Length: 148
Image (cartoon, rainbow, N blue to C red; front, side):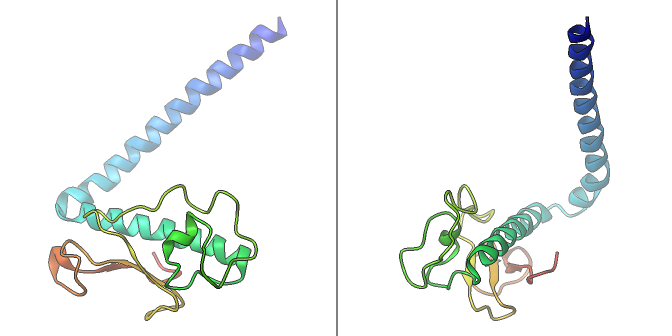
């Protein structure tokens, strides 16, 4: 008897959990959709900023484990694969810090500098034209460390 009521509880919590997620997704769509629709070219910029923020978080974990960021020559690839050039990370996490290295919304690799020009490290996309600088759709996309 207890097993049957326990199973119902799990089924109810699963259904309730899915309903809550549906409500959350609906609220996000209601609040974010007008912002994206009012700026038709903004989707790639938003995607790039989210990718850069995720890469920044992975780099912070790398730094916590290894007391330094990968150098420019090691690049962001050091998050996915153990670096084969010095300085070697002493506590690199088996399996890496990311599953795969994303490309920017235009199919180009994200740029990485360590030390950075604008902060301790810089991660950025060169925009649609894949050339430094640019205006409008071709503008470089950056997040400074510790900013959103």
